[in-house]
Image 1 (cartoon, rainbow, N blue to C red):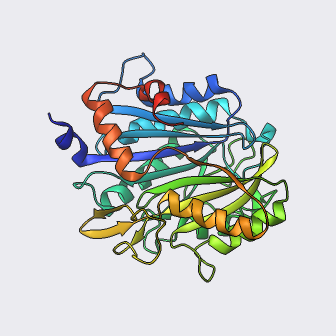
Image 2: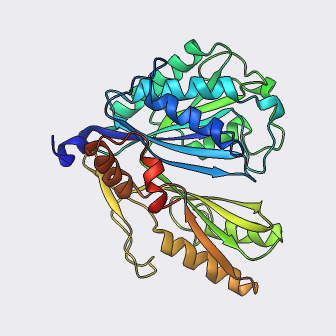
Image 3: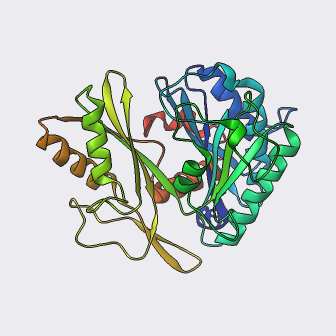
Length: 330
């Protein structure tokens, strides 16, 4: 089978877990997606990347498989994570509510549509609460039928941005009242969301918050698709951006010399802001406050990179592709 035909039914799950300091534990979760309890490899599944952050105490594991086989990989990884991570003892700068904090499913192949991903996310949510009794889920995106509320809205409704969320006040969509050990997990489906973090050379969180406010989508002159937090990070401030894909053709007036990458789902065009534009906008705003930028990091890949690397990994039979791709990007 050619790499092109391999890619037509691919989906990605950027699994967010609340552990970034014990890398051996994170790798156990990644391997649970790839191998069954007897150690037999799941064909057609690969982990492209593992991103760890010690200050955030958070990791993002990029799992890719066919829409027909992704469910078991996700459920097995989540089951392992829930067995290893206890939210009662968790500390970290990044907001979070669950040991498994986020389970987003994104279509990569042209033969995968919104309904496919929505049904798969709903099945994952149900399967998770059945396999790990005591776990609770809220749904977002296409899985949040029929309203289809976005992740940012659902997080606000759940209290995810609060320093100490009130679990007893939450009414999950699937499962019981959230327990302190497991917390609350977001499960959903949407067009691909990229994570782009720009570090600015200051310890002043107020400066970071002004920049974050100026570039987020909801602000006048903000960038479409950007949800932004300013967080203290390793003695500096990080402008942490969720870069959502938005409907329509790429804008021509918002560039930094690089076009907006675009793709189609169910015949609908989507595009997302390029990292170069986000970096340029942060640098411009920071410069006005006499603050420099230090670095830009993508957590994983762009949508097109994700599909291309997944096709490469699967055509080579590489399950633990993250070990090789240290040479590409971390």
